[in-house]
Length: 497
Image 1 (cartoon, rainbow, N blue to C red):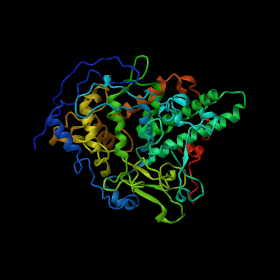
Image 2: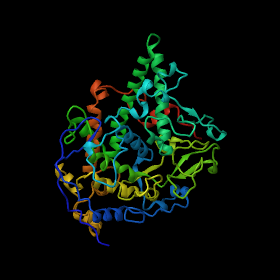
Image 3: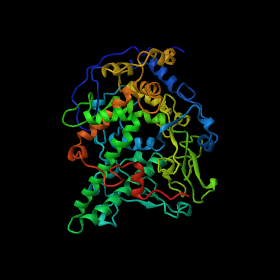
C-alpha cells in the first residue's frame, strides 16, 4: 500500500492575536507536520487502526482477569507512580478547560476561528454552569430557594446501598436519563460521572461549613460566592500540587510553578493552544485501562457482588444497565468505590497504565461517532493533528530548545513516512515512553502540559495564585490537599472491610 510522506508540509499565515474563549497556537510560525492529502490520511489511518501498531490486542473476554492477572497486561503494563483515578481526573480537567463541538475531522481547520465553549480557565464552570440564576436546573430548590446548593439524587434500588450501609448517589437526570450537568461530557462514562458527583457533594459540604463559620447575616448570593471560592481554590491546589507533579514529574512541575511559562504567552487573557488540546494533553488516552473494578458491591467478601467491567464493550447490548462503564445510565450497581482509583492507604488502589504509544483495545471501537467518521480513538487523534495543522513533534522540540527523539526511537514509523516529521500527539506518547519509562510525560509533552495548566491558573484573576499566593488548604491535613481528601470530605468514600 503506498503512503504519503509526512515531511511534505505547507506554511500558512496565522494570526498572533488570541481572543478569550478561542483556541490558538504556541508556535504560530511553525508549519503543519504534513500536507492534508489522501496519502497522508491513509498513513495515519493505518497507524491508528484497530489491529494496527497502536493496538495491543487485549484479550477482552474476561475483564476480571485483565485486572487481576499481570500476564494479561504485558502489552498494557502498570504505571508504578500514577493511580487509576488520575485518567478520569485528567478528563474532568479537560472538560473544564475546553469544549469544541464544531470542528471537523474531514477538513482543515483554523483553530483561531473555532470557539471554545469553555472559559480557558480551571474555574469549574463545568460544575457550576452559569450559576444559580443562569443554570437553575443544577441547583437544589429545597435549599436556600435554589440559590446555593448543587443537586444530587439517590440511586433507587437495594443494590445502591454499599456494604457499609451508605446510600449511593447519582447526578440529577431528566426523564430520559440525560444528566443535568454543566458539561454533558461529564456523563460520558461512569467514573467521570461519579467524579462530577463528588465535586457536587464537595461543594455542598463546603457550603454547609461556610454557613456554620459565617453565621447569620449573609445573603444566599454571598454564601454561594464564598463556598464557590473555597471549592475552586482547593481544586486549583490539588491540580498544581498533586495532578501536575505525577503527570509531568515533580522537578518540571516545581520549575514551571516557580518561574512561570517560557512559551505559553497571551494578550489580556489566556487561550487554549492546539499543541496542548489536540496533542500533548491527549496523553490520558494512553492511560485508560481495558477494564476496571467499579465497586465492591453490596456484600463484603463476595466477588460476585463486585462490579468488574470493561471500560467500553462495543459488542454489548445497550440496556439500562450495560456490562461496561459507559455513562448515561442509572442502575443499582452503577456507582464507584473510590478505593480502586485513588490511594487511601488501604492497599486497594490500582495503578494506571504506562504512558506509551499503545491504547487499550477497547478504544479502537468507540460508540456513537458520526456516520462516516473513524471509530478508532487513535485515528481520530491523529487526524485532528492533521486538520488542525499541528506542527511535528520534532519541530516543536527544536522550537522549545529541548532534545529531539533519536531517529532510532521512531524507526517503526519509517514504513509510513512519519518518522522524520511525526504527529505531535504520537511524538509526546513515544517521548514519555523513551525519556520517562512511561511513568510521566517527557520534556516536550510535560512542558506543554505544565505551562498551559500553570498559565491558565496564573492568568485567572480570581485564582488563589493571583488573589492569595500564600494560601494553603483548610481541608485535608498539614496544609496538604489531594483527591483522597476531597472524596472523603465529599462523603463519597465507603468504609470497605
